[in-house]
Amino acid sequence: MATGNYGVVRPSDVSSEDVQIFYNYSSTRQASVTGLIELDAESLLTDVVSNSVVNGLQQNLAGFKNLTLPSDTFGAIGIYNMVIRPREITTTIVDCGVLSSTPEIKGIVLRVDDLPTNLSVDNALIGFRIEYFDENGKINNLFRIVTSSGRVEPVNQNLNNTTQKAIRYRYTDVGDLIFCTLTPTSSPIGLPNKIPFIGTPNQTITVTNTYFDPIHLEIDMVEHDAQTLSYALYGNQSKSIQDGIYTIYDNNNLIYKQFNLFEIQDNNNNPLYEAREVRVNIDQNKNFTNIFTNT
Image (tube, rainbow, N blue to C red):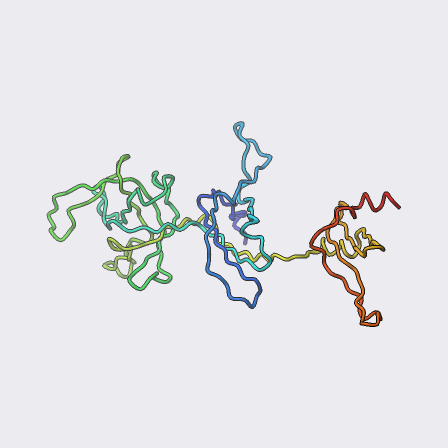
C-alpha cells in the first residue's frame, strides 16, 4: 500500500565552494593514465537561473550547474576522466569531550580556524560525514554523521569522580572551538557499557558535506564529430582545376578544410597514384563568396 509520501528526492542546494573537481588525461584508452589533478571548482561552476522570482529576487534552479571546460586544459584530443565530489576538509580532532550542562552528551571538538567561515556558524555542519585516519591511513568504512555543531569554550569543573575529565565545554557565540555531536554516540540496548567510537584527540579526520553523490564523467575529445563529418559528405565544396586546391565549407560557408589534389607519376610521367594532402596554409582566395560569385 502507498503511504502517501512521494517526491522525497529533492534537488541539492549546493554552491560551488562545496564542490571539488578532479580530472586526469589519457591520449588513448591504451595509454597510461596520469594522476588526478584538482581544478578550481568555483571558477568552473556557475548557477543556472530559473524563471522563478521570490520576494523580488531571481531564483537559481536547484540541483543544476553550468560546467565550463577551459580550452587550455581540455584542448588536446584524448580521454578525460572527471570526478565531481563534495568537498573534503582534512583537519584534526582537538578533543573528545562532553558539555558542562549536559555531561551525557558526547562529541568531538574542532578548531574554527581549520574550517571555512561558512561552516563555523551554529549547526552548519549538520549532516556532514566524518571519516577517520590512523597510522595506516584511512580507516575503511568507518564514518559518523554530524547531528549538531556550535561554538564552545572550555571550562574547568570540580568533579567528585577523579576518573572523569575536569575540562568540559559550554556553548558561546565567540568561542574558537566547535563542538560536534555525532551519530551513533549512544550505547546499544544490548551492550549498555559499549560506547561507539567517535574519535580520539589529535586524530586526523575528513569532514565532508553530503549535499550530493559523487559524479564521474568520461569526456572523449575527438577531432571530428557528426557535424564536421557532414561537411565532407553533404557540405558545399569546390575544386580548383588549375592549382588542385580542394576546399570544404561548413554550414556557414566558411572554409573548414583545404587539400592539395595531385598525381604521383613515375620517371616516364605515367600516373601512379592520385593523392590528397591536407593544406596547412589556407588559401583564403578560395572562400565561398569568391568562388561561387564568379561562376
